[in-house]
Length: 246
Ligand SMILES: Nc1ncnc2c1ncn2[C@@H]1O[C@H](COP(=O)(O)OP(=O)(O)O)[C@@H](O)[C@H]1O
Ligand SMILES: CC(C)(COP(=O)(O)O)[C@@H](O)C(=O)NCCC(=O)O
Ligand SMILES: [K+]
Image 1 (cartoon, rainbow, N blue to C red):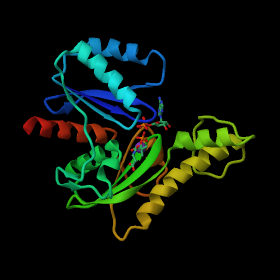
Image 2: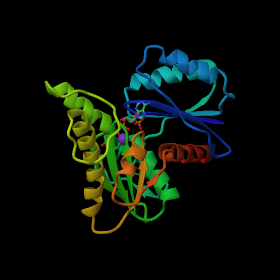
Image 3: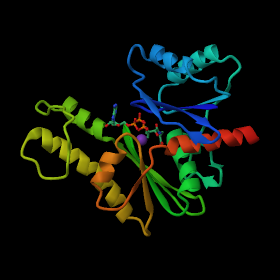
């Protein structure tokens, strides 16, 4: 059994993989005070994993805490910390400094090349919205980073005198009350970003969405898309399998 952990800027996600099959993902707010105790309670009751993989775009301190806890629970556990590199699994990183590409984006690219072969656009709708393009031959073309839905709304509330924060349903209609105007404006900013980015490319790409807001954004896109919330874990699992082989 392999324990897979994905630490984003909003949430920690973890799952287990058995014989190459991913179990359902569990989500945790790792900024809550009792987060380690909560996670420990879960991990105490799972079968001892052979390997632990942690992909984090958060502070290194979070990874260190997780490692300390895992090593106390399962002494001798093999640890894998995936990193973005210049090339791996027939995927070639477009970044001038490849290691600076977020490891979540890199793992999603590895998964996309394997599970969505062809010319593919990956959009991760998390704390940030990231857009990455990969071609049939595994060549990453680069990408974009923009604030995610929650972050856009929080920054409006934090940087204006009159705008409130609320999490009501959004759509892309013109609004007649402030709350809806914010919710709809930010949702359309996200959907419009994805559509405009694709429209500016010289060819057609298959669109795959992941991240906490993937379903919401997909619902309001004027173009077809696939939602695959396991993209990062799929990439992480393949990364671990290769570590086993090497
Ligand atoms: N229970 C939840 N807690 C936090 N965010 C949530 C929740 N449900 C949906 N979301 C949405 O998911 C987004 C975070 O997605 P996620 O993929 O977990 O981000 P990250 O990888 O950056 O931690 C938030 O912007 C929020 O709008
Ligand atoms: C862009 C990100 C903040 C997205 O993180 P997330 O929304 O998943 O929390 C993360 O992938 C990151 O820190 N990337 C490093 C910079 C880069 O990819 O260019
Ligand atoms: K993201």
